[in-house]
Each structure stands twice: as structure tokens, then as C-alpha cells.
Length: 172
Length: 288
Picture 1 (cartoon, each protein chain N blue to C red):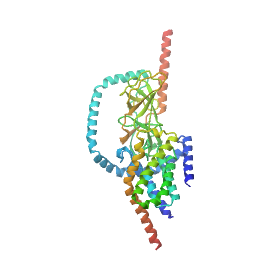
Picture 2 (picture 1 turned 90 degrees about the vertical axis):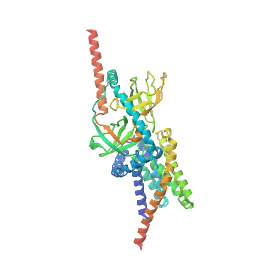
Picture 3 (picture 1 turned 90 degrees about the horizontal axis):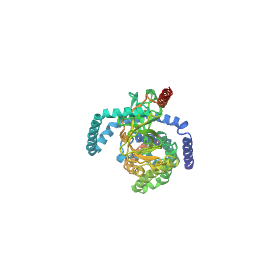
Picture 4 (picture 1 turned 60 degrees about the horizontal axis):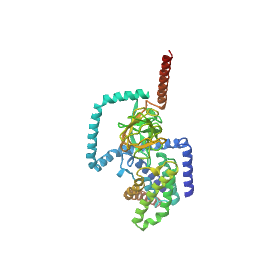
């Protein structure tokens, strides 16, 4: 496992958090009032490029940073994105079966992440499950993530590929 | 490793709940906020015009509606201006009844929101002013329509606002029509919950609520009652209100720095001492 792949993944998560809180934040792009879950999408997208153990760490780190930037209890997004990373790591070998698998994984895992967070936040006393518009908040990010999946998968694929070429050239 | 990380997350959550978001968690939040703030400001500066253009183009149909809404609002305001004298008199009456004076010309700091929380479940916004500008935890944050929230976390050049829609935020309010007090708390999104524990009169749809001066300066518009609620003996009067501020479209905000809970305490103290003096003099007069 190249250390640079982990670094690229980490940078991708950091960039995703910045974009999520600005471009897709309040006053930003929020179709139907709900923003995509970009960090979740990035965790899913890097799953095919790094080993599962590192993916778990990336998920956990991204989740912890989301917790620190958000208003909820510390650790909830960390647990959520660790679970998302775990499932993505288990399913990544199926991605070659066709684009429909990727579609299902992106939509399904995003919704799973949102739902799991709601569940955990409710267990920790935030009453999130009683929020108005809960279904949209769980389901719509998956739909927006599906649209964003094309550029995100492409961009990350290029980033990892160029890094691979750079390593290959140096070795030659 | 999966289980270990989940366990670590669980332990973090437990400690954070125990510490009520303070201690190490608060330090880490401040550090992360300071680390991300420059990047967020940079991205916000670059993308805001583009987002504004895209937003405007996407909402062309909505602009007509917005225009009508604003025209309606202007008519409402014109009517309100005509009623100013009557309202002034009403305010004076309320002040004399409650013993509270609405502070005028409160010092404030104008700030701009540059980012928000990272998920749909967050009720926080980040502003570009911090402790260097005199902002401290707990101060009220308002816009031209009313109360938005309170300052929750402060670093040198940025601060986090917790919106009034957050379930952990509670605001003491006064119903303008009846002068009765209650508590408004967030429900995560959308409307707010109003609870009045010793209500003697019902609240009606359209009744306006302002801050009662217990924690925030008195007289800041908080919202409008959405549904009429009657009083029932032995029960808490409970209904929903629509926030006065348009929380989904906040750009510039004012942080009221010229008021604190201590001011509220002092004012209450003044009220108490005035009341005591009045009753003493009354007793003396009667006794005399």
C-alpha cells in the first residue's frame, strides 16, 4: 500500500469537508433544501483505491472532523462513516460488475449513513428522529450523491492514476 | 479494527455527552474551526458569486414570487409605520407592566456567514468575526427580521452560531398581545416549539413573540404563533411558532455585544430594587 494513496484519500476528505460546509452549506447549492453528503461520497469513492483497513481510518477521521465542525455529539459521524467505510470496503470488489452496482452502493450507502446518524443522534439524546422533513434528509443526499458520483469518481480516479504513473516513472 | 474504531467513536460520544460539549471536545472543536476557517473563507470568496448566479438562474420563476412577497412586505411595513404611535404607547405600557425597558442602541458587531455545519442535521453557522472583535460565548445573534441564535463557540477570528432551531437552544419569550412569558425551543428544523407553564390566557395564531430579556436583550422578535392553543388547567400550553428570521437565507448578521446575562441580572436587580422601594414607600405612606 502506497502511503501517498492514503494521503490523497485524506486530502480528498478534507477538501470534501470544506466544499460541504461552503458550496453545499447554508446559502449555497441545496436543491430542494437538502445538500449532498459529499464526505460520505468521497469515502465510498476512495474505497476502490485503498485497502480496507486504511479506508476504515479515513472514514473514522472524516467522521471525527465532521463531528468537530458540526453541532452534534463528538463521535457520532465518526461511528457512522466508519460503518459506511466498512460496508464500502466489503462491496468494492463488486464495483466491476457494472455501473448499476455503483449506483446502488452510492445511493444505498449514503442513505444508510444518514439513517445511522439519525439513529445514533437519537440514542444520544438529540431527538433527531422527530425532526421535520426527516425522510428528505435521509433520502435526498443519496440522489444528489449519485449525480456527484460521476465527477468525484472520475476526479479521484485521475488523482490516484497520476500518482501511480509518477511512482512508475520514478521506478523506471 | 472496525470494532475498535466504532468503540472509540462510542467512547468519544459518551465522554462528550458527559462533558456537555466542553473540556477537550471544546478545545478540539476550536482547533478544527481555526484550521478550516481560512480554507472555508477562501472557497466562500471564490464560489459565492458563482453560487449567487446559479441560484438566481435556477430560481427565475421564484423571483416573481419573491418580488410579490417583498411588495406585500413593503405594504405591511407602511401600515406598521402608520401604527407606530399606537405601538409606542403599547410598548410603554408593556414596559411599565413588566418593569423591563427595551435597550436602545445596543452595541453590535456586523458579521458575515462563511460556512455552515457539514450535514443536514447541523444547526450551526460560522461567522467571520471572533474574540478579536469582542464576541464572546452566549451573545445574541440577530438579523433584520429577528433572533437567529446565540454565539456558541469562539476563536480569535471566527465564531460559531447555534441557531434557534437547534433542540438544545431555549429562548425565554414574551407574547406581545398578553405579556405572558414562555420558552421557545428548537425542533431541529422548521417551526419552533412554544411552551408556557403558567399561562392564564390562550395564544392565538398570529400572536407575535419577542425575547423576554432573561438571557438575550428584551424585545427582539422571535416568531409568530402558527396555531392557536388554549389553556388547560394542569397542562402546559404548547404550540408551534414560525421563526421571525428567515434562517435558510442568512448572509449578514449582527452579534449584540452590548448585552450579557449579567446585564439581564442587573436589570432584574434594578427591577427588584425599584419594586422594593415602591412597596416600601407605599407602606410608609399607608403607615403614615
